[in-house]
Image 1 (cartoon, rainbow, N blue to C red):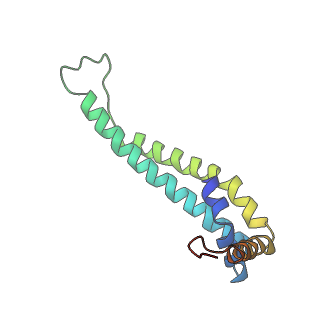
Image 2 (image 1 turned 90 degrees about the vertical axis):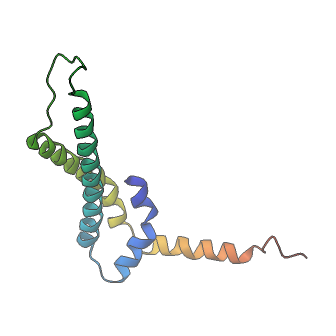
Image 3 (image 1 turned 45 degrees about the vertical axis):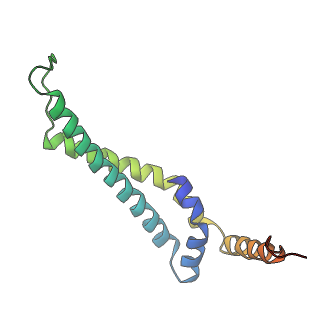
Length: 124
């Protein structure tokens, strides 16, 4: 998540110039982080259910009985949401407070450097 937010620094700068407040950007980045974590939690619950069904077949010989209940799935989803919130909170705070001119200046410098180099296919 941290890399995703760092890569979107220019996008955050564009959103700021369009009138998004810092709080709106923080909410946007955190909601994306939580959504990604909840999707991962759903995949985890589905795979966990399949593994529990496979392991609880007769003849496996496990000393305990395995069950996937709705309460277990709910706890897994809550943990996924909290992990998503925490993992998105710290990285999303940095671009939210960064100056607007830094990403834009970096983009302008990069485009200037690209234009200054001749294309390799062009022969002198």
